[in-house]
Amino acid sequence: MDPVIFAREQLDFEPDPWQVEVLLSPANRLLLNCSRQAGKSTTTAIVALHTAHFRPGSLVLLVSPSLRQSSELFKKVTGFLDALDDRPRLTEDNKLSFALENGSRVVSLPGTEATIRGFSAPDLVIEDEAARVPDALYYSIRPMLAVSGGRLILMSTPFGKRGHFFEAWTEGGDDWQRIKIPAPRCPRITPEFLEQERRAIGDWWFEQEYMCEFRQATDSVFRYDDVMGAVSEDVPLLFAPPVTRTAAGLDDDVFPLFDEATE
Ligand SMILES: Nc1ncnc2c1ncn2[C@@H]1O[C@H](COP(=O)(O)OP(=O)(O)OP(=O)(O)O)[C@@H](O)[C@H]1O
Ligand SMILES: [Mg+2]
Image (cartoon, rainbow, N blue to C red; front, side, top):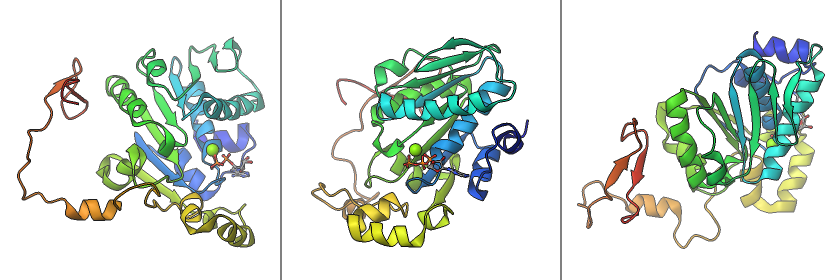
């Protein structure tokens, strides 16, 4: 079923135009750089439920910096599940996960690498507050997707010019579809509120929390732009790059594992 019709008719949810774009996106790699309170968790909760409901046997993982945040997203998914007229019977139902009769599962996970390694071949991984999710966790998610051909959605407000969300947004190339929604594009956030916020929290926070702009981390010794400006392709490396080995069955390009000794 069309996810927009699913949202409107079965969940009684009227998506904003950008939320329609997210719901209809065919992208296997999707970046949502959106203002606080724009509605990103709500939208991806619908994507999660739609996947579980209409793709039997699918595994959907919800990841975030902490279990508390993942379970907030999970609650949005179960909230929509409860709204369904013909709510499917659950074969597993607890605070952190549920399974549908069709064999699909939705699981919320803490932001630790060890936990995610216990799952295999997810159809969809949604990373909430991605700018604050440890890179090690992100790098352990990616190979699972290589095997399953699963979908990856990263959503966040910016948090410094650092980390995998920033890198995917700025250097991830055509592999990613990018959707940027600053607060003025959200119909539920008023210009008056935004003016008040800018005064209260200052430019550095305001630009990131509401305007989707990556700002230099305040604790960096050097500015990101200065470091990047000093990098030159013409200068030979002082040391050889680390030796890489590959995870079984994967390309070097997809998932290089740094040799622990040289890391
Ligand atoms: N299309 C919509 N129509 C009405 N309300 C909406 C819509 N989209 C989102 N909301 C409401 O806006 C609020 C914020 O939504 P949500 O939590 O999804 O935003 P968010 O971008 O994840 O915010 P945060 O950055 O704080 O995590 C919620 O109360 C949600 O119900
Ligand atoms: Mg959210």
